[in-house]
Image (cartoon, rainbow, N blue to C red; front, side, top):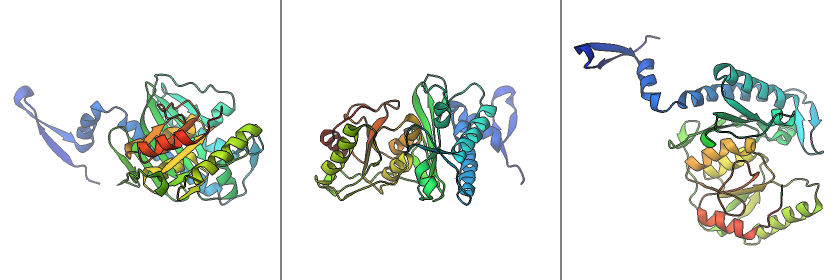
Length: 300
Protein backbone atom coordinates (compact mmCIF):
# COMPACT_ATOMS: atom_id res chain seq x y z
CA UNK A 1 0.00 0.00 0.00
CA UNK A 2 1.11 3.54 -0.74
CA UNK A 3 2.49 5.27 2.36
CA UNK A 4 0.55 8.39 3.22
CA UNK A 5 2.74 11.49 3.66
CA UNK A 6 1.77 14.21 6.09
CA UNK A 7 3.46 17.61 5.91
CA UNK A 8 4.30 19.09 9.28
CA UNK A 9 5.32 22.75 9.30
CA UNK A 10 8.01 23.54 11.86
CA UNK A 11 9.79 26.77 12.64
CA UNK A 12 13.25 25.29 13.01
CA UNK A 13 15.41 26.59 10.14
CA UNK A 14 12.16 27.83 8.53
CA UNK A 15 11.80 24.53 6.67
CA UNK A 16 8.92 22.14 6.08
CA UNK A 17 9.59 18.58 7.22
CA UNK A 18 7.77 15.58 5.75
CA UNK A 19 6.83 12.73 8.08
CA UNK A 20 5.21 9.41 7.32
CA UNK A 21 1.94 8.65 9.06
CA UNK A 22 3.72 6.07 11.22
CA UNK A 23 6.36 8.61 12.30
CA UNK A 24 3.73 11.19 13.18
CA UNK A 25 1.72 8.69 15.23
CA UNK A 26 4.92 7.65 16.98
CA UNK A 27 5.53 11.26 17.98
CA UNK A 28 1.95 11.54 19.27
CA UNK A 29 2.43 8.40 21.39
CA UNK A 30 5.64 9.60 23.05
CA UNK A 31 3.63 10.68 26.11
CA UNK A 32 2.06 7.20 26.29
CA UNK A 33 4.97 4.75 26.11
CA UNK A 34 2.82 1.71 26.90
CA UNK A 35 0.50 1.93 23.91
CA UNK A 36 2.98 0.07 21.71
CA UNK A 37 3.12 -2.67 24.36
CA UNK A 38 -0.66 -2.96 24.27
CA UNK A 39 -0.83 -3.11 20.48
CA UNK A 40 1.82 -5.82 20.43
CA UNK A 41 0.00 -7.70 23.19
CA UNK A 42 -3.22 -7.79 21.15
CA UNK A 43 -1.39 -9.49 18.28
CA UNK A 44 0.27 -12.04 20.57
CA UNK A 45 -3.06 -12.75 22.26
CA UNK A 46 -4.69 -13.45 18.90
CA UNK A 47 -1.95 -15.97 18.12
CA UNK A 48 -2.43 -17.60 21.52
CA UNK A 49 -6.18 -17.83 20.96
CA UNK A 50 -5.62 -19.54 17.63
CA UNK A 51 -3.45 -22.18 19.32
CA UNK A 52 -6.20 -22.82 21.89
CA UNK A 53 -8.95 -23.12 19.28
CA UNK A 54 -6.86 -25.54 17.24
CA UNK A 55 -6.16 -27.63 20.35
CA UNK A 56 -9.88 -27.89 21.06
CA UNK A 57 -10.21 -29.93 17.87
CA UNK A 58 -7.73 -32.53 19.11
CA UNK A 59 -7.33 -34.89 22.06
CA UNK A 60 -6.53 -33.00 25.25
CA UNK A 61 -3.92 -34.38 27.63
CA UNK A 62 -4.86 -33.46 31.20
CA UNK A 63 -2.54 -33.30 34.20
CA UNK A 64 -3.22 -32.52 37.86
CA UNK A 65 -1.54 -29.78 39.89
CA UNK A 66 -2.40 -29.15 43.54
CA UNK A 67 -5.71 -31.06 43.74
CA UNK A 68 -7.97 -33.32 41.68
CA UNK A 69 -9.77 -30.25 40.31
CA UNK A 70 -6.67 -28.07 39.75
CA UNK A 71 -5.94 -29.03 36.17
CA UNK A 72 -3.29 -28.15 33.61
CA UNK A 73 -2.88 -29.23 29.99
CA UNK A 74 -0.06 -29.24 27.48
CA UNK A 75 -1.84 -26.35 25.77
CA UNK A 76 -1.68 -24.19 28.94
CA UNK A 77 2.08 -24.63 28.99
CA UNK A 78 2.51 -24.20 25.23
CA UNK A 79 0.48 -20.99 25.15
CA UNK A 80 2.33 -19.47 28.09
CA UNK A 81 5.68 -20.22 26.44
CA UNK A 82 4.44 -18.60 23.25
CA UNK A 83 3.28 -15.44 25.03
CA UNK A 84 6.32 -14.99 27.27
CA UNK A 85 8.91 -15.76 24.59
CA UNK A 86 7.26 -13.37 22.13
CA UNK A 87 7.06 -10.51 24.64
CA UNK A 88 10.51 -11.15 26.13
CA UNK A 89 12.11 -10.98 22.70
CA UNK A 90 10.67 -7.49 22.18
CA UNK A 91 10.87 -6.26 25.78
CA UNK A 92 13.79 -8.12 27.41
CA UNK A 93 13.92 -5.91 30.53
CA UNK A 94 10.29 -6.46 31.50
CA UNK A 95 9.14 -8.83 34.25
CA UNK A 96 6.62 -11.67 34.06
CA UNK A 97 4.19 -13.46 36.35
CA UNK A 98 2.67 -16.43 34.54
CA UNK A 99 0.38 -19.06 36.01
CA UNK A 100 2.31 -22.05 34.69
CA UNK A 101 5.69 -20.47 35.45
CA UNK A 102 4.64 -19.96 39.06
CA UNK A 103 3.36 -23.54 39.20
CA UNK A 104 6.82 -24.64 38.05
CA UNK A 105 8.50 -22.69 40.87
CA UNK A 106 8.91 -19.13 39.58
CA UNK A 107 8.13 -16.36 42.11
CA UNK A 108 4.81 -14.53 42.10
CA UNK A 109 6.08 -11.13 43.18
CA UNK A 110 4.82 -7.82 41.84
CA UNK A 111 7.47 -5.06 41.62
CA UNK A 112 7.61 -1.54 40.19
CA UNK A 113 9.18 -2.90 36.99
CA UNK A 114 6.91 -3.15 33.91
CA UNK A 115 5.28 -6.53 34.49
CA UNK A 116 3.17 -8.82 32.32
CA UNK A 117 0.70 -10.92 34.34
CA UNK A 118 -0.41 -13.87 32.23
CA UNK A 119 -3.07 -16.55 32.40
CA UNK A 120 -2.58 -18.59 29.21
CA UNK A 121 -5.91 -20.39 29.57
CA UNK A 122 -8.29 -18.91 32.09
CA UNK A 123 -10.90 -21.64 32.41
CA UNK A 124 -8.76 -24.75 32.01
CA UNK A 125 -11.57 -27.00 33.27
CA UNK A 126 -13.84 -25.44 30.63
CA UNK A 127 -11.13 -26.10 28.04
CA UNK A 128 -10.83 -29.75 29.10
CA UNK A 129 -14.61 -30.21 28.74
CA UNK A 130 -14.85 -27.96 25.68
CA UNK A 131 -17.21 -25.66 27.55
CA UNK A 132 -17.00 -22.47 25.50
CA UNK A 133 -15.88 -19.88 28.08
CA UNK A 134 -12.11 -20.11 27.65
CA UNK A 135 -9.91 -17.03 27.61
CA UNK A 136 -6.38 -15.71 27.36
CA UNK A 137 -5.91 -13.03 30.01
CA UNK A 138 -3.00 -10.58 30.17
CA UNK A 139 -2.61 -7.58 32.44
CA UNK A 140 0.29 -5.12 32.27
CA UNK A 141 1.43 -3.18 35.34
CA UNK A 142 3.91 -0.37 35.91
CA UNK A 143 4.85 0.61 39.46
CA UNK A 144 2.27 -1.96 40.60
CA UNK A 145 -0.57 -0.11 38.83
CA UNK A 146 -2.49 -1.74 35.97
CA UNK A 147 -1.85 0.14 32.71
CA UNK A 148 -3.85 -2.07 30.38
CA UNK A 149 -5.60 -5.40 30.19
CA UNK A 150 -6.59 -7.79 27.43
CA UNK A 151 -9.00 -10.72 27.72
CA UNK A 152 -9.62 -12.82 24.62
CA UNK A 153 -12.59 -15.18 24.92
CA UNK A 154 -11.27 -17.15 21.99
CA UNK A 155 -14.12 -19.61 21.34
CA UNK A 156 -16.56 -16.69 21.25
CA UNK A 157 -13.98 -14.60 19.34
CA UNK A 158 -14.51 -11.69 21.72
CA UNK A 159 -11.45 -9.50 22.31
CA UNK A 160 -11.87 -7.28 25.38
CA UNK A 161 -9.33 -4.48 25.70
CA UNK A 162 -8.84 -1.60 28.11
CA UNK A 163 -6.18 1.08 28.44
CA UNK A 164 -5.90 3.18 31.59
CA UNK A 165 -7.98 6.32 31.14
CA UNK A 166 -9.10 5.43 27.62
CA UNK A 167 -12.15 3.21 28.10
CA UNK A 168 -13.01 -0.45 27.58
CA UNK A 169 -13.91 -2.21 24.35
CA UNK A 170 -15.11 -5.53 22.96
CA UNK A 171 -13.97 -6.18 19.40
CA UNK A 172 -13.37 -2.45 19.09
CA UNK A 173 -16.81 -1.34 20.28
CA UNK A 174 -17.10 0.62 23.57
CA UNK A 175 -18.60 -1.25 26.52
CA UNK A 176 -19.90 -0.15 29.90
CA UNK A 177 -21.39 -1.72 33.01
CA UNK A 178 -25.16 -1.94 33.48
CA UNK A 179 -25.20 0.74 36.16
CA UNK A 180 -27.63 -1.35 38.22
CA UNK A 181 -27.70 -0.26 41.87
CA UNK A 182 -30.45 -2.54 43.21
CA UNK A 183 -29.00 -5.93 44.09
CA UNK A 184 -32.48 -7.50 44.07
CA UNK A 185 -32.60 -6.79 40.32
CA UNK A 186 -29.12 -8.17 39.69
CA UNK A 187 -27.60 -11.22 38.06
CA UNK A 188 -24.59 -12.28 40.13
CA UNK A 189 -21.63 -14.41 39.07
CA UNK A 190 -19.41 -16.58 41.25
CA UNK A 191 -17.59 -19.89 40.94
CA UNK A 192 -18.43 -23.14 42.69
CA UNK A 193 -15.77 -25.78 43.07
CA UNK A 194 -14.28 -28.36 45.38
CA UNK A 195 -12.64 -27.02 48.55
CA UNK A 196 -10.29 -29.32 50.45
CA UNK A 197 -10.98 -27.51 53.71
CA UNK A 198 -14.49 -28.61 54.81
CA UNK A 199 -15.07 -25.27 56.52
CA UNK A 200 -14.22 -23.37 53.33
CA UNK A 201 -16.59 -25.60 51.38
CA UNK A 202 -19.39 -24.97 53.88
CA UNK A 203 -18.87 -21.19 53.76
CA UNK A 204 -18.78 -21.15 49.95
CA UNK A 205 -22.18 -22.89 49.79
CA UNK A 206 -23.58 -20.73 52.58
CA UNK A 207 -22.53 -17.58 50.73
CA UNK A 208 -24.34 -18.73 47.60
CA UNK A 209 -27.48 -19.36 49.61
CA UNK A 210 -27.17 -15.93 51.27
CA UNK A 211 -26.89 -14.12 47.95
CA UNK A 212 -29.76 -16.09 46.39
CA UNK A 213 -32.09 -15.35 49.28
CA UNK A 214 -31.56 -11.56 49.24
CA UNK A 215 -33.10 -12.30 46.66
CA UNK A 216 -31.25 -11.66 43.39
CA UNK A 217 -32.39 -12.59 39.89
CA UNK A 218 -29.96 -15.51 39.90
CA UNK A 219 -26.38 -16.76 40.18
CA UNK A 220 -24.30 -18.00 37.25
CA UNK A 221 -20.89 -19.71 37.08
CA UNK A 222 -19.30 -19.45 33.61
CA UNK A 223 -16.00 -20.92 34.81
CA UNK A 224 -13.49 -18.19 33.88
CA UNK A 225 -12.65 -15.29 36.19
CA UNK A 226 -11.53 -13.10 33.30
CA UNK A 227 -14.71 -13.77 31.34
CA UNK A 228 -16.81 -13.19 34.46
CA UNK A 229 -15.25 -9.76 34.93
CA UNK A 230 -15.80 -8.88 31.28
CA UNK A 231 -19.45 -9.97 31.50
CA UNK A 232 -19.88 -7.41 34.28
CA UNK A 233 -17.95 -4.86 32.23
CA UNK A 234 -20.30 -5.17 29.25
CA UNK A 235 -23.49 -5.21 31.33
CA UNK A 236 -24.41 -8.87 30.86
CA UNK A 237 -24.13 -9.41 34.63
CA UNK A 238 -24.21 -6.99 37.53
CA UNK A 239 -21.69 -8.44 39.98
CA UNK A 240 -19.06 -11.11 40.52
CA UNK A 241 -17.38 -12.24 43.72
CA UNK A 242 -14.70 -14.86 44.35
CA UNK A 243 -12.18 -15.98 46.97
CA UNK A 244 -9.19 -18.16 46.08
CA UNK A 245 -8.19 -16.80 42.68
CA UNK A 246 -4.80 -15.36 41.68
CA UNK A 247 -3.39 -12.18 40.17
CA UNK A 248 -3.22 -13.77 36.71
CA UNK A 249 -6.94 -14.53 36.88
CA UNK A 250 -7.78 -10.92 37.75
CA UNK A 251 -5.29 -8.55 36.11
CA UNK A 252 -6.64 -8.41 32.57
CA UNK A 253 -10.27 -8.26 33.63
CA UNK A 254 -9.59 -5.64 36.31
CA UNK A 255 -8.48 -3.19 33.63
CA UNK A 256 -11.53 -3.92 31.50
CA UNK A 257 -14.14 -3.59 34.24
CA UNK A 258 -12.54 -0.45 35.71
CA UNK A 259 -12.49 1.31 32.35
CA UNK A 260 -16.08 0.21 31.71
CA UNK A 261 -17.16 2.15 34.81
CA UNK A 262 -17.36 -0.78 37.21
CA UNK A 263 -16.31 -1.01 40.84
CA UNK A 264 -13.66 -3.43 42.15
CA UNK A 265 -13.17 -3.92 45.87
CA UNK A 266 -11.74 -6.47 48.25
CA UNK A 267 -14.14 -9.12 49.52
CA UNK A 268 -14.26 -7.13 52.78
CA UNK A 269 -15.41 -4.03 50.92
CA UNK A 270 -12.00 -2.33 51.28
CA UNK A 271 -9.57 -1.36 48.51
CA UNK A 272 -8.83 -3.96 45.84
CA UNK A 273 -5.41 -5.62 46.05
CA UNK A 274 -4.31 -7.45 42.91
CA UNK A 275 -2.20 -9.86 44.95
CA UNK A 276 -4.87 -10.63 47.57
CA UNK A 277 -6.56 -13.56 45.75
CA UNK A 278 -10.09 -12.22 46.33
CA UNK A 279 -12.41 -9.58 44.94
CA UNK A 280 -15.89 -8.24 44.32
CA UNK A 281 -16.66 -6.69 40.94
CA UNK A 282 -19.92 -4.79 40.50
CA UNK A 283 -21.82 -2.37 38.32
CA UNK A 284 -22.14 0.03 41.25
CA UNK A 285 -20.64 0.64 44.67
CA UNK A 286 -24.01 -0.03 46.30
CA UNK A 287 -24.06 -3.60 45.01
CA UNK A 288 -20.37 -4.19 45.84
CA UNK A 289 -20.91 -3.00 49.42
CA UNK A 290 -24.04 -5.13 49.84
CA UNK A 291 -22.23 -8.29 48.73
CA UNK A 292 -19.31 -7.49 51.05
CA UNK A 293 -21.77 -7.09 53.93
CA UNK A 294 -23.62 -10.34 53.24
CA UNK A 295 -20.93 -12.93 52.54
CA UNK A 296 -18.64 -14.67 55.01
CA UNK A 297 -14.93 -14.47 54.33
CA UNK A 298 -12.47 -17.33 54.53
CA UNK A 299 -8.68 -17.41 54.25
CA UNK A 300 -7.14 -18.50 50.94
